[in-house]
Image 1 (spheres, rainbow, N blue to C red):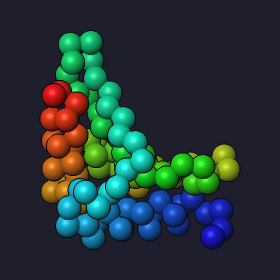
Image 2: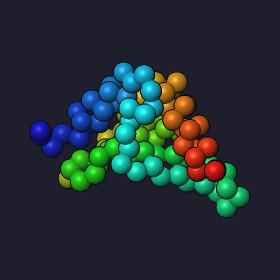
Image 3: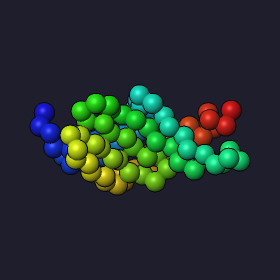
Image 4: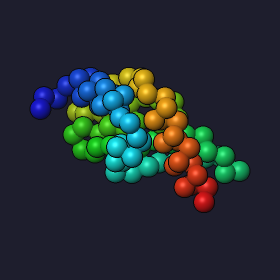
Length: 95
């Protein structure tokens, strides 16, 4: 694999666009940002770490990757899967 974060992020976004279920994300970690009153503001799923580090923001529908000082962000066109992921992780957090 080459150190081309743009290609890697675009490929990951295409993979997510082809998903039928958010469970196919298989995140290593789910990060939830909330306000002091407990309102969920943002949910980010960490997909890979190290080289490269890739995250999908299920709240705003973006994939971002970092590798060797480079970074790239692209939009994901699969709102139905990301909306279900957001709602599911939000419910888990609030429980």
